[in-house]
Image (tube, rainbow, N blue to C red; front, side):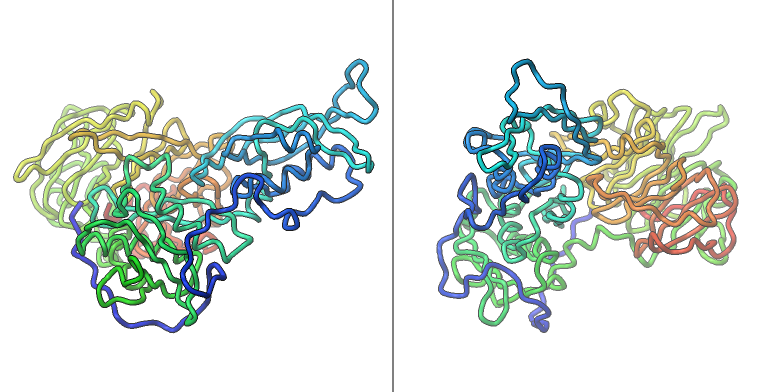
Length: 572
């Protein structure tokens, strides 16, 4: 990936639009840790509603919204005193849906004040200790023992080993927050989606800084980095100053250069933007982290994430009748062999800056191969060949990947005048399944692919000159349809096309949210999907190329009325 120039940080202070953060407004104080274990104030945790029967109590237990940060205080209120003292669930939280509670046949000599309840539910996913969500599937069932206490109230005597939370309680009590880390070449930042407890808005900035200092999540720790050195810590509480600015005072940064300071500023300011609209007063030991820059806004550091967007100055291209054409009203062929018909083009991709093309072409033997070259000029054929190659995907402007024969992935790398072809380790990613599509994120740290009709997301890991896709996560494994295509919609979400009744869907990169696009006008099957500037989604069905800019927008035919058998694509 081409390295970005240093961002120019603006001096202008924008008007304050909202206040946020922890309520300390006095002199700086030592940082107080988040409430852990059983340290939550007793009067802040409500008891279960009185009079609940044993089945409703167990159901309500999963709706308590309890979290590891509070030591599962809310859930402990549903337990007997003895169980509350002994219960030590894992720090991960199992999210479930469609909860049902069913009576269990009493055991011999079972006391009258004891009932056994079978709690059954559908697994949705798990919130890891690092606050990242990973999908899970299948049925969940556990037997819960419930006792009636002296006050006549039912309480759980034998709780589940897992801390359960219903999907509804999770959505009501948590919010997704992107925490920003350095991308693979250290020149820009990329979001790592995390879920934080949301009801107490004042504590959100502190929690964001805690997650930022702790580093990337388990799934992306080998693909993302941080300019915050090991041992870095907040010097004081993340707090609101008298003038409304959000004060983040760091310590233990060591001897770091200006470039690293600017990257830290980008990580901090962009991570805080979703939980606070306040200016960020970023400090090191009480003085500005960036000399002469007292307060910062997201606009001051936005250039560090600019490579995550599609170039708005490039119109996009399409394979039409085995030639490359421009996606505009004229739909004219591009110059050079890829547009003239000298090459039989089946799939293609344009580099992020628009200067290069990669094309999958058919040779006289009927096999397909990969050709790479400057836009509008001659192209060089590279090994290997096969019976199938996926649409290529670029990592920056000097590296392009493609899937060969549904099993192997190769990357062609510009080595200064020639292209070297190297394998990518995708054994963990595909698991031996049929890999039909692969799309790299614009920041180069993540890959999304289609394996056996399901979306798989993984980290792109550089391992001493070799590259592998590690820590794969399958999204939507039990949704009742097959995914046939995928592309990156934003740096935090994907767009997928399916063979189901909802042909186009937006999917968060962790797989928690699936949002249907309007399906009117579209005809199955959908042959291709691509994403242009400003979240412009373009799909090809049997008739035309269609476009929409939002999930609730009506699909409209692209200018030029391009046939549906064509394959559109934008740079990347």
